[in-house]
Length: 318
Length: 303
Image 1 (cartoon, rainbow over the protein chains, first blue to last red):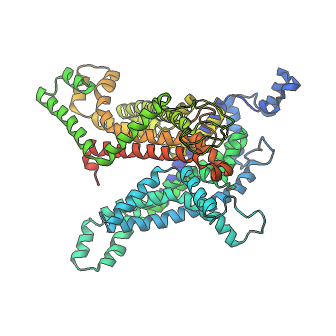
Image 2: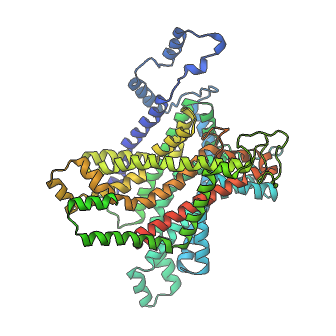
């Protein structure tokens, strides 16, 4: 097992390097560079002055040298400073990351619990009225994009019904308490959990349907095991195995969903920060965030594989 | 006559009888598709949407860029069927013309991604070995990273136009196609008729393009259908974030962007409800058609 974990980590390293090359390459092929920030049309800057700025930021060196300098820096944990306000990129991201983890984490927990429960329910009642209804709704759930669902939820539940605040993380006029925090978190987290609920439900239903037709379940039924025990002791654990993979696969989806949900609900997380970076052409911040997102996704994949290996003793590690 | 039957005739490895049965298969697939009621209903819905958007000039009473400052934020009425926006532009005509953009991006981006995915997948599956290794690791990296993040970065860096969006979405959505084509090519290349092609001394290019790919396309149809739906959504998403199709050109996404303004969201719902409805309707239709196609082509997939 240890060897397996070690090998999975070693395999992740070239993937990580490839991602850094893509992140760096994307910025490199984009037109314009840092001198654009210093150009004032009224100052009539000479080419020499532009070159001097480039030299100060090390842009006069060949691209490979710059890439390796950047790589060494990020491996030391130095992500550089923002173009727009000069603050360190690392601490800016750390600040915003916690807000996104709160939002996306809540959504994932809701998604997994509700989705798996509904999946098992519909599988046990296949072809019933509820099965058709819920399967249909889940089809709707994966077809409606997060931003449409978010707008509709905001319109109905905040503006028309006034049940929830219309955005942000805390009230503007009062000290935040646990209750106000939950009020602010509830609607965006529910919107963000729609896609995971639908995915977990479809996945669990499929996997459960496969398991309850397996020979060992028929054997259990044949020797008179109570139906409840068959469902929860014999079928459920095995049906849950492939669902573990979905936990890791959900992460990129949550990141994408978070960009939209945070925008709609003015949630001060990574999604809104990313848009700030994009709109301000804040290159160091963009690269830093791409890197963090890549690391999180890679780590999630790694953990998923390891968790799957731990949960299923039939997986062989050689 | 299809490419497939041409290649079959040229090879002469199938008898006339067998070719007729292949054509009967096509008919059976069509009949299976037509029996799927949601899919057929979706196809009709999509056809109506396509006709409305392509024929937009025939169905609109105002130009989509025509500003009327005396009729700002007008409620839907007999004159402006879906009302007007804040500068007095007709929402109905913007909806139709916006649909044009959404469909162009949906089909255009899918064309680009299918092209890239087919080429990479075919090379990977046909040559195997290190070519396969390199292309598949490359694909893994692209699959790991949420592609909309790269799209946002690119959209911010590149000049903004509809064609940039088509290129960006297409260039980052090919991974599924590449994997699918690869797996198909891997199995087809082992068939006897490919061995015959090699014995006849055909070039690799000819074997791949003329003899393998036509047989891959059948299983690709469903994937392509889903890809169109997802490209339409991606365009809408990018435009919603203000990084997609640049105004004043309307698209369903940038019409929805108006709803980010709480005042419009609250007081002018006819500005954002129509594009939201059209978007969901179109994508649902496309997904149902995709489901129908998949079930018709490969009935074993029916759950």
